[in-house]
Image 1 (cartoon, rainbow, N blue to C red):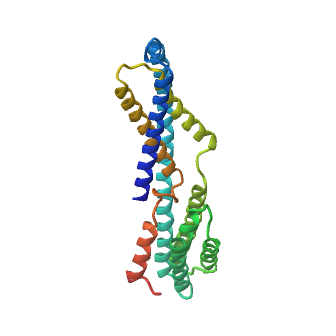
Image 2: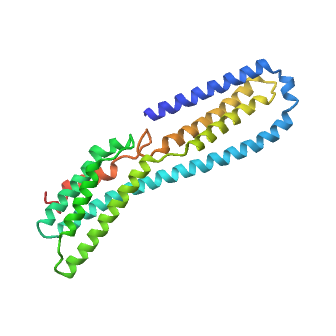
Image 3: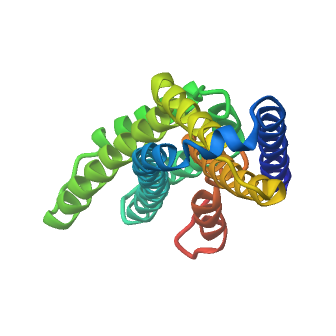
Length: 258
């Protein structure tokens, strides 16, 4: 809800600034003078509009794909924790209870501590310690049968997948778009809106409505890009739903012995 409010305020603010700029140009430059260059300005603006539209589209697609990959990474990480928990049930003591306890502790650490830290681009050191403990506990187990050897191998694979997914999640939480790209987007938006001031229209209010519509759309798209740039912070941040689900399942499953 807060994100929606911020978005509305940003769009309204940009629209007011755009209209103020148009009003200033209309006062300083007569409509007749601007009308003389409508044909040339229209041709140049068409090229400018296409270039900026392509840039916006590419950035939106890239940001959305990164956001989707981040969400898939979280789901893979949660799934790996769950698989380790279920595999531990088939192991003998003491590895059985130890692995289940570590898997549950890791999920709780991510939900209760690390998710808040990621908003500042930080991570929980205890999360890595728990993964190391899971790996060490599993590696200390000596399989005696073919079935146990298969469980052992699968467990090691899941630990590796867990570590990889966690690493990718932390990398994504700290990476945003290059500053130069933001400069290009903002400058392109200002140029696209400002160029419309050069057109001369007899109806002043029609001209203002066109400028407001263009400025609002550009502002909304840029705000959306900003909201999705960091998947784990802001109003559009990815939730802990995947980990909440497995924690709930740990509490209700008959395979949970702790």
